[in-house]
Amino acid sequence: MTPQEFPLLKISDLNFSYGNTKVLESINFEMNYGHISCILGPSGSGKSTLFNLITALLHFDAGSIKIDNLELSSIPEELVRTKYIGIIFQKFELYPHMNVLDNVISSIWHVTQDYEKNKQLATGILKNMGIHEHINKLPDELSGGQKQRVGIARALINSPKLIVADEPTSNLDTDTSEKIMEILGGLKSKEHGIIYSTHNLNNARYADNVFILKDGKLNEIEEERLIKSSHFSDLY
Ligand code: ADP
Image (cartoon, rainbow, N blue to C red; front, side, top):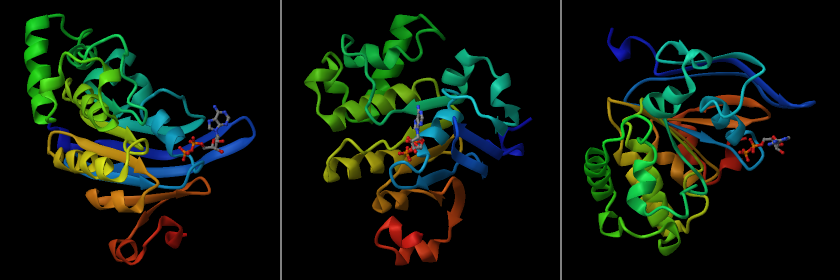
């Protein structure tokens, strides 16, 4: 069975509420290997909630999320975080007491404890991220952009099928954001898919498909409409 026989990610009729507050309503979404999808939406529109459901950090009320045709809830948790999904966090979430190298290795440690092999792999990825000369530094000694490069390397080390990034540039200045988005866009590969969220319309151009989350509903935006818009509020 080749992975391409099924969508990489398929979300069907997904609903989620916090108590009486409905956040997501009948969300349907599909993406394939090799694709980059962007979810646009202002603060509070439910992007993090959706991403937390996709990464199994939250459990949904009704509907289905399938990765590679497997119900997310049926995949053992340790495999969700390794083989299936690599997460890039908004606030980097690096271990403050670990150096750059060990932060990246931390993600593969429960898959294989061969430190030398892990070190070689992590160093190669950090080199691709342009940050290998900082491998012995602690996160506090890095700039925001450097921290996020480490965060991306950590998400990649297990070669996950799906790379999920919830507002990966929202804690970065404009120039650094641009560089991080270029790195994300450059990760496009048939081996995996990438889904990211942003509240910055400018960041949407790295995606093959762009969706907007509004009033709990997710809708794809046609390219023409996207080109004509200067701010995501124009898309409402
Ligand atoms: P976004 O990521 O687009 O900013 P969120 O997913 O964080 O949006 O939030 C969507 C809605 O859910 C908001 O109205 C927010 O206040 C609410 N919300 C988020 N987290 C919680 C929570 N833990 N408990 C209750 N409501 C929440």
